[in-house]
Structures are given as C-alpha cells and as structure tokens.
Length: 352
Image 1: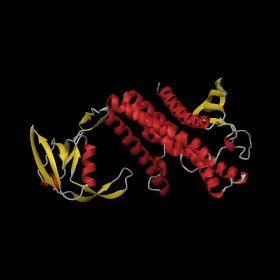
Image 2 (image 1 turned 60 degrees about the horizontal axis):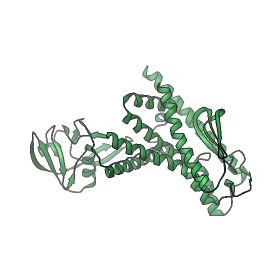
Image 3 (image 1 turned 180 degrees about the horizontal axis):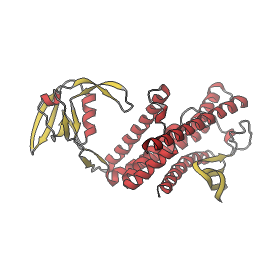
Image 4 (image 1 turned 180 degrees about the vertical axis):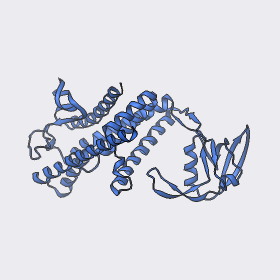
C-alpha cells in the first residue's frame, strides 16, 4: 500500500509541475506534442486537442515535449508561431518557470487545506525551566501558560521564539497558572545554540522548553490563507538554505536521501493521518520547485540560465557548449540520484 501511495503522490506532483509548463506554453501559442507522466516505454496514451497524454513505464518524473524544443538537438529549428524556439527569451523563461511555480502554488493550496482541516502546533505551555536561567530567576514554573509577551498575543510555542529573538531589551510575559493570571518581566540572555542545520549560533533565550502539549488551531479563512503563505515561504527558504549548506559542506553528503527515503516518508505519513500526508506532499512539492530552479543544465533553472544569456548577449550559446553543459547536468543529476540511493541503502543496513 505504501508503494502505491508513493507512486500516486509522486505522479500527482509531477502532473502539476508539467501542467504549469503546459499551460504557459499553450498561453504563448506553443504546440505541445506530448504530456508524459513517467519516462521510457509508453504504457497508456490518449490524444486530445493535438497533444498525446501518456503514462510511461518509469514513474519517477515526467515531461512535456514542445515543438521546437529538444535537448538532444539544441540547434533544432522548427518554424511557425507555434514553435518554442521562435518565442522571445522572456516568453521561454516564463514557460520554464511555470513548472516550479505550479509546485509552489500546489504546496500553498495543500497547506491551506491543512489549515482548514485542522492544523496543529505546540501549545505555549512551559515544560522545563533551566537552572539559573532568566526564566527561573523571574519565577517561571513548569506548566505555566504564556498568553502574551509585551503587546504580542501568543497562540503557539513558535510565537514565543519569534518575539524573544526579534525584540530588544526586557520582555513582559503575561502568564496563566492554576487559573490565576500574572505578569513577569524577563531579561533574555545571549546563549550558544544550534539552528536547524546544526550550526553553532548565538541566540537570545530565556531558558525554557515546551511541555509537548499539542493544540489544534482554529483558523478563519483569512488566517488559513496567511498560514498557507507563511508555511510555503518557510519551506522554500529552508530548502534553498539546505542546498546552500550542502554546497558549502556544512550539511554532509550522507544526509542526501533518495527515492527509497522519499517513499518511506510518504508511506509513514499516509499511515499516520491525512494531515501528515498532506504536509509531506506539500513539502516535497516545494522541494521539486526549488530543485528545478537550480542553475543546472537539464533542469528548468539551467534552461532559464541559457535564455538569460541570450537576453544579455543577444545570441544563443553554441550547440557544442549547450550539449556539453546539458550532458554535464545529466551527469550531476545521475550522481546525486545514485548518492541518494547509496545513502538510503546504508541507512537500511545500519538500522538492522
């Protein structure tokens, strides 16, 4: 069942990515010969409005084949107003960007549904109070509920961290303890900490941790839209930073996961709850959008780079350079895929 869920989710994400390319191409009048979910041998095909819609044997991706675009024949010249290569560079960039953009939009829609169905978060309830910390010195105790800091209403535990980090000077905490309300003034201190990438950082802290209590968020329509926007931006930023840290060597290459890891995560999420499945699907959708924008030839970002070059220098890269960079791009992608699978297999054996 897990494998079926994985294939359905992946096909769903690929469909929306390619649909973005397809709709943008058709908007500019470009003929699309094939819309494929999967690669390799054709398993099922249906022609509709001049496009062959198909499922192929290897379901790990997809593509739209447009008139006038062929990576194996960069110098191809197909005349006519319905040809990709006769469009202006900015129009081609829009067509290329539309795929990743569709993934971002899909993620936002999924996060919106999560908000409507019942998003959850850690409650702003104190769990542990560190010895000799500003919180302990102010008299904060375990199970205290934080209602407000200065003039900011606190709804979730994440709100507390945002206020502490982004506010200077002492903070006035409004708390609830055993049905009694009171206020405490706390002076945060700068302490050693780690970010999500396990880098050592300096951070304003008061010395408390969450109790682990989870609450359901009762969000209005407008608040659900804001939730979806913020979650999509956060996920995108996190993945962009993750790629940057990987290139810098801060994140080890052993952390790269392949299709086996993705499949396991999707399978586990589907067995947990619909909210968990929607959350991981949204995160993978953002991942696809970000990774496809990387300036690697053979990816959308690489083709965008070629078109930017044409816009700046008023000429296309030579066929020889285009082919060389495209092949190098495929080598990089294949190497990353093999590394991911290698890491997946290592994790399986290490867990046994």
